Image (cartoon, rainbow, N blue to C red):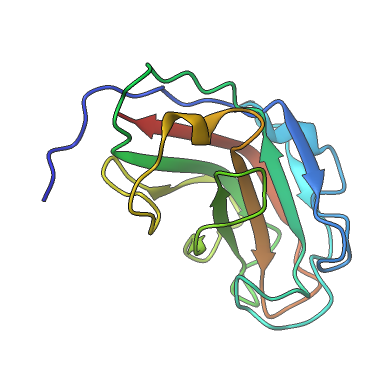
Length: 178
């Protein structure tokens, strides 16, 4: 197993976001999506997430939202060892097994990694960390250019077997290990 890197970007916040149209009810985190930019107990909220009871991460009936422009700075020539995504989140109830799925894009949203998923969300805010110091999200490698504001995206899909479930996201942060 590779030795974890000692250099990281630290946790970085997005500065732009957009609901993914044509997915779920098409409005993603429709209430205060910019509240997910910082860890401050102010929430982006996705009310009644999606239009079916399928609970798979890639289902087109689930609400999805992209976060981007993390202003990630990695030294030229650095080797990317792993990527972590931190979600500070909760759901209004645990019925329907609500969870958040995360995918990463390195080319402006043209391609995406396979999804990673939280455990069932609780009704109190909790921190869910996906990926790790040596986790490349199924990719053979990442390049420093993959993390520019033009290229890097984080997509969150809210899934549950209950379409009335509400999802709240306090912070969506990224840390790159190199």
